Length: 119
Image (cartoon, rainbow, N blue to C red):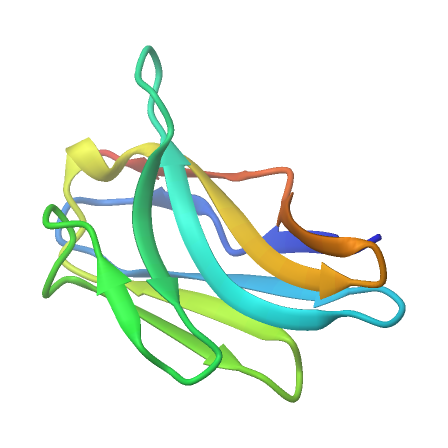
């Protein structure tokens, strides 16, 4: 079993910045893709950004150029640096980790962290 824990959410004004962090832990697993998703009230969960173990990144068009995803393979962490935040970025942000364990490859999710962009 892989545990995933996020931190760093909060309230920020439009145009501001915020950094989310996520750490994966547990016995004997191999990290694959790590990423961030978000879910706004009344909407479906959507992809924000992903990063492979080799460092290849993928971003939603709505955050391209404003958000940067990064990871530390040794520390088993992934971060999302968010800049030029807009009210429409308000959502619960979830960390997703795809990991290979003894029984196979699975997706693991954090509990979510609230990001609110408002003046």
